[in-house]
Every structure is written in C-alpha cells, then in structure tokens.
Image (cartoon, rainbow, N blue to C red; front, side, top):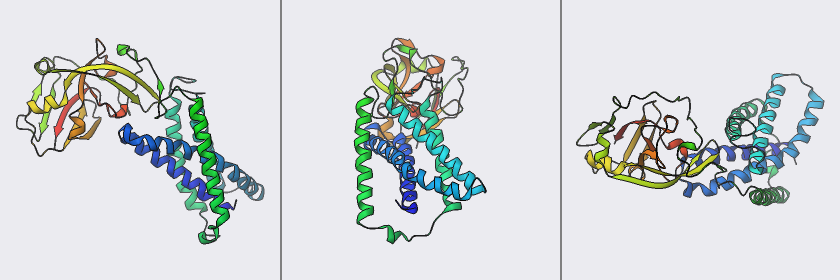
Length: 327
C-alpha cells in the first residue's frame, strides 16, 4: 500500500474513533447503538492498517535514524496508537476490565490515550504532512478493493470479538452488582470529590422560567409524590448496574414550581458545580433519587439526591443535586 494511502487510512480510522466515541457518550443509548458498532469496526481497521504502517515506518527509521524532532513526534504518536488500540482490543476480549488489572478502569486509560493520540496525530500531520502523490492518483480499482477488503475484514473480526465478549453491553461496559443497594461501584466524575453535606442546611433550589421559585429542604420533598424506577446506570468507566431507584419525579418538582409552558431546557447542577442541560421532555422522565433499593443513597452515590435518567450514560446522572434551572 502506498505510504500516503496508508497514512490516510490511519487518519480516517482515528478520526472515526474519536467522533464515534465522543458522540456516543452524549446520545441516548437507543440512538447510539450504531456508533458503538462503528467504533469497534474503526478500531479493528486501525489495527489492521498498522501492519502497512509498520513496514513504512521501519524503512523510514532505517534511512533517517532517531534524529530530529519529527522522528520523536512520530514515535510518540506510534506509542499512543499502540496503547490505545491495545487497550481497546484487550477490553473487547475481556482481558482487562474496570477493576482489573488495576483499580483504575482500563477503559478510562483507553479514552485518555485515545484523546492524546488525536492531539499527537494532528501535530504529526502538520509536521510530516504529504502532498504527493496527488490524491487523484490514489483513486482507482485497486484502492477501492483494498478499502473494501479492509472494512470487510474489520467487520468480520468485530463480529468475532462480540461473540467472545458476551458479558458486556453494546456500550462495552461490564456488569457490576445489580440490585445490591449501595454496593455497586462508586465513580466520581471529573475532579469532583465527595462533598460533606449538612442535610439540615441543604436546600434544593428551583429557579429560572418558573412562576414559583423555591428553596426546598429535604423534608419539603416528602410533600411530592414518590416515584420509583428500575433503571440501568451505564458508567463511562466501563461498568453497568441495574438498580431500583426511588425519590421524586423531576416533572412533579417542575410542576410544583409552575414551569412556564415556553421552557424547553432544564439544567441540573450539583453542589460541586458539575452540571448538564437536558431537553425538557428528557428531563421530565427523570427521577431525583434519594434511595437505591431500600437504602438511602450513600455519600459516594450522591446523597441526598442524584439524578436518574434512564437511557443516558452515567456521567449525566448528576450527583449531590443542589439546583434546577428551567429555561
């Protein structure tokens, strides 16, 4: 395979991995299924294309040696590629998980190395970008057949991996202690730490496009109807767990506050500052859970209230909720 064509295939594979990986996080699982499949196929395409790239890089190193910043940039890019692809394949095959071989999830390491790879690839392209041969010269029957063959092989291998890794969901997450109350894993989003909340002083503020803004104590919430739902939390750290969540409906809370008919967006804000904005229809099917199973939420799981939104990934289930803003 010509050097420029091999580089373009690798670039397309990495771009596809970044796009499918990031967008799939943000969409409801039902809408993102094809993105997870495409992500695995793109990952295998990357691995297969590395066979051609290895031969090209080996010849280049023999000719140039380890001299020059561009060579070291290329080596750093290669290392990030191997780390990202290796962790992805190991995760898919079940060789690593969210709790082994390290206490820190191997999937998180895969994501971080993938983001680093994207940055390095851009820098590598700026430094070592090629203009020859012309792209039009690469188009042809042979190139098309190579492309079709590569995608076909990637699809077949993806199906084979899926048969090996039956224990995971389509998102790649692995099961962790369903219907166990607070015994499922604790994952802290971003740089948050578990806050010390004085329940007597804590208030849930409701503001924005509402006719009756309020600051509700934990006792005030008992006036609202109790809601319960069995829902799967699927964490981007690579685990999933189904639990029975109970608390108050976000729709009931907004109705009590007199939400304006024109309001279309609902922002939920943690006492730590973590926040997310939801479509109104999406938010109104959510629960502010105070209990999981028959147990009050533990501090690590979001006491006194955490957002539960069935169908969305776990990092959107805001913990330690302190404010709701309608807009």
